[in-house]
Image: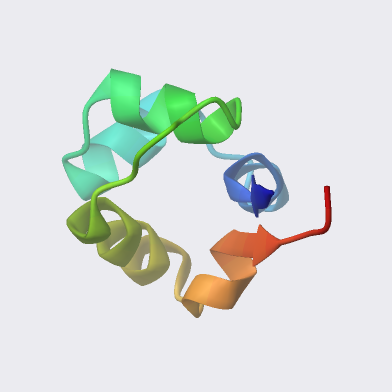
Length: 67
């Protein structure tokens, strides 16, 4: 299972979904699905934009954990 830590990263920086949308240009749907960890597919460009926004490696955003 892949865990997305977007909610944690946003919380640490006191950011809202609208803040992430404005800073990255990503759609509300994309950000919300990642925030709630319900996304089934993720665009590589979206991941790149989020890593740039949070100035973090991909491993801080996504993590593979055993089922």
